Image (cartoon, rainbow, N blue to C red; front, side):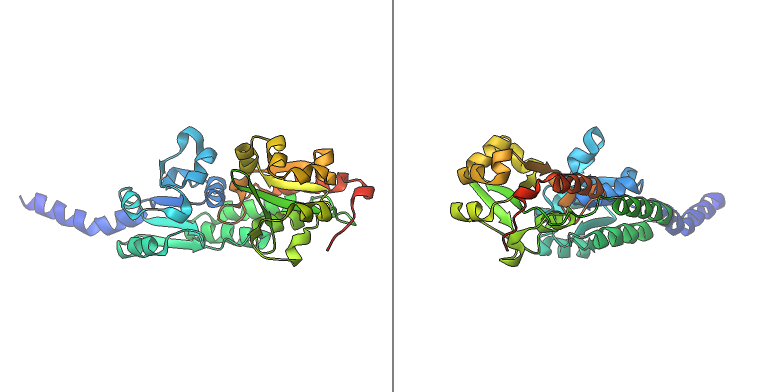
Length: 288
């Protein structure tokens, strides 16, 4: 009996150390954040991810917690997580407060669509989850890729970033958007950045006057519209623009912009820089 008691006491004393050494159970809310976890070799610790992350993980995806802006406390708590990691886009706030009250650590990263923020988020996650070496290596690789990008052409070709918001409508990116950041970092000029912020609809006449050389959008928007022809059909005057006449429409993976930029953004920027350099000078008129 004494041995049993002693053993039980030793177990109770050791339990805090065992619990501390256990790998934390993580939930990622945002495809860009999940992509960083992949690069940092943290996916085995994921017990849940949001719906935008599912394509990244395929058959190995853990439980789906839904869209990052609309997560639910009950389903998430059923996964017994230690830490929920998301961006400023994650919510709603009342659910985050409920999770904190239940003892879940909620780590909120910046969703600013910039390369500096991407590198900072990598460092933050590496430090928080004991992956400093992997984070440093990932940063070096990204910085090397970014340094090797083709130079921005001069003049920069005019480009618009479009989102197929719903059936039959298109929104155009202004300043303070991931779309505008992609246009600028991709070596192109967004004339709408000086006109408004966020996303807005434009008139048919405005598209003609802007004369974009490139139309950028997400691959998800293209799928929703039924391809390039379907996207152009949402606003028929786009066919009369230089981009429409030449079929110069590029779709990028929208998951690279959910919760800030993903490490895969370097490959996308290479594609955009190459497109910017391919624009013919006669079609590069600027409209500010």
